[in-house]
Amino acid sequence: MAETTPDGLPRGFRSAEQGWPQLHRIPHPPRRLPLLGDVLGVDRHTPVQDSIRLGRELGPIFRRRVFGREFVFVGGADLAAELADETRFAKHVGLGIANLRPVAGDGLFTAYNHEPNWQLAHDVLAPGFSREAMAGYHPMMLDVAARLTDRWDTAAAAGRSVDVPGDMTKLTLETIARTGFGHDFGSFERERPHPFVTAMVGTLSYAQRLNTVPSPLLIRRAARRNDADIAFLNRTVDDLVRARRTSGASGGGDLLDRMLDTAHPETGERLAARNVRHQVITFLVAGHETTSGALSFALHHLALHPEAAARARAEVDRVWGATGAPGYEQVARLRYVRRVLDESLRLWPTAPAFAREARQDTVLAGTHPMRRGAWALVLVASLHRDPQVWGPDPERFDPDRFDAGAVRARPPHTFKPFGTGARACIGRQFALHEATLVLGLLLRRYELVPDPGYRLTVTERLTLMPDGLRLHLRPRTAASEPETPADARTHR
Image 1 (cartoon, rainbow, N blue to C red):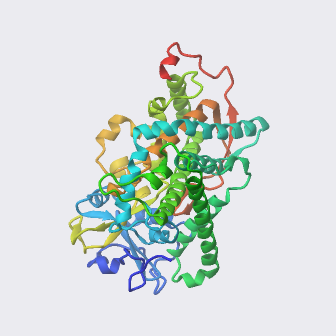
Image 2: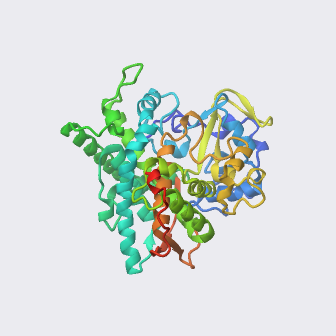
Image 3: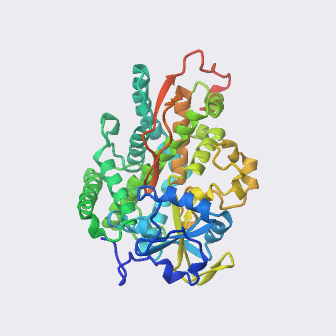
């Protein structure tokens, strides 16, 4: 179970009542009910989307009460920029993240700021995301992507649609497992999700559900299922680590090698065995869940906007030419494809919120006093829709919002799909390279045909994912493929 404070809250969690002296000045939804709080007109399955809607109605800062717990939400760009100030605010391991500590412990994502293993692991593992390391992962990313395109080629030839979120999950799980830990889950050889994915989804869903019930005792059956899911994740990771230790083989300096063999460059300290388990689970879960969602949303938008897909495809044809396997450097040259990915993350950031707590007593926006430890949730999807930053039509899909000139013209801290500050996602460049590469490969190979009856439905399990998204694929014919440019070899 998660560590708790004497008042029963997860350690590091502080209720809004404790930390906001003038909480009454922050608006909340109408029709608040005694004991239950702000539950009318909302769905416990979609708390993020409900909060986005409430933010449009209540303003850039508002609060919600659920079964006696008060949550303060921020969606305005000016307020979010203040909360991003590392001298005044730090990451807060809020209730949703704290609910994951039984499985991820003091891993990089779930560690409290005061826990020494966060800094130790960060310093040991950061070189695993250097440019040199990323270039080493690139061939393995290509290999896994080839397994995806083999599967999609078969579906296209048979005239079958493809399960986009399911296949993106297979892709991203195998990519992080192979590049980080030298492991193959065999996802593409299974019709059903790998049991690791099933257990992972179960733990994420349970963690979110805990936020919307007054007591875990009310969901005892779900708690037992969650315990079984955690036990399975632990066994899977322990077997993976044991196999590496027993074989004595090197992973070529991959993340697992670093966890097992690398000492801190200054202190000489190494990660303890229990923390290695926590870090492996963190990378396997966080390293594939958010990226699969980002790819799924991007493919959805490309299918709905053929003009953007054509422009992105033309860029791939121009930059990669007839090169069979694009090189590491060629991926970074897909600037418009990257804009497509960024715009998809703007509309649907797969990590939809992050919490920030006051380092000392302070005043937010000059009007909202916060005591030390008081915290607020930054709703990233609301931040990414602030009309003061993104214009009067922030719901419109427009990759040119991320043209270099447009990016320079925007204030800082307005685009935050990977969190902020020292505790931002350590693997963000890994995820962006993988996703850009995969989008390029798929655009070069297929035209994406949407199901005309599909309307985007977003499922929430702490992360966001399109639900039920299927696409038809039209293989590009020889006539539609580009002639090999004279300088194609220079792109290798």
